[in-house]
Image (cartoon, rainbow, N blue to C red; front, top):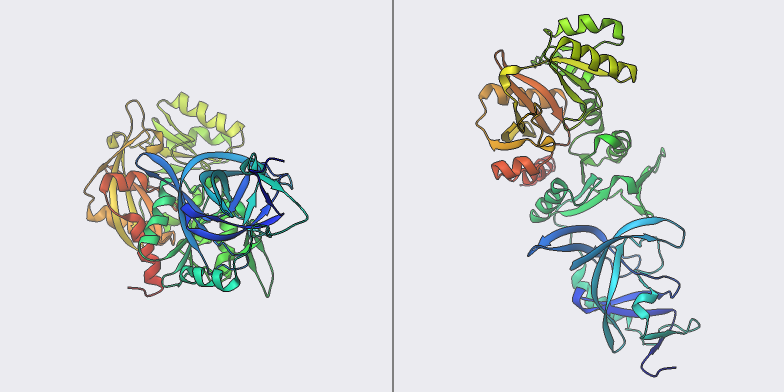
Length: 456
């Protein structure tokens, strides 16, 4: 046996000098290829055009008060298969590991290990050529005293000054989600990214709960910001309702999000509140297609899928024959559609007004790409600053109020009849409008939560 190799037991205390974590207990597992470190609130970011990641570590098991905030250069994202067969995509960092008197650089994946017995798993890739494991032994490299560990980490205990806020969404790398996390942290709040697909709930009359993958209970949040993709509206709203049942403040309620996603119902609701929209038709049978086209003023006209988002499922039919073909094709697929008058004078432009807590905080004009009639940024449209009228602001505020949304992206089109409302979005994107207006809209969303808790 080469004398240069260090003999260790099945459990050892180790440290990560570059992450300023001097004491963390590791499970030594030569059966695992990759090493893993317990991490929460993992958020990627750019530094000098390099990919980095920031995250939080609770280095001591069963102690969430002690939190180390860490940053490291991101070297990879890879799918890791656990011993139970579960596959998970993880961020991978490279950092120094110290075991006893030896220090070397290893690769570590970041994952939530709340349900595991150890905050750190040392895999065989990190040990090769350096370590021999004696599975009958433990702590061959010594143990720090309890008082020594406690005294060091005492300064790392998180003192809660701000609110504990969760961003309930799907993608931590999305610009909007990153900006909301940053804005909350800058205002002194404890921000947590909660992946919708990793949340699950316990329905119980006396002890209802929401859990995060690994068993962590999420009942101690002050507020939640739902950012729910249309494709997971049902589950995302179910989670939001569960937070509401736990008396957690939600920036947009489950009911308001649900009704905003139903295009037909939302238009009916808006009309009932005196908000003007383009003339719109809805029918069930292809037999009514001819009358439906006449109802909206004939061709050209717009055909919209009720389930479409970001400009997808929206078709411009320039002739009556084209309109009949498109409508009947959608109907043959049992798809629900709206038929809407085409506002030619808008010339491929619309307005996006961002409403937060009953106030228009920013507005932009979106212009369709050449040859396109949809002005959505996701469809290649461009954004620019625009001065909106008092009437347009009034429509946006009235629409958000009608939908009972604290945060809303309200789309308006300018017509010869005056401003008309196109759509109300309950999870509006921030990138286009912050980029065009240079306004801190994410900060306005955090302020709306603070206002509810009477924080100045």
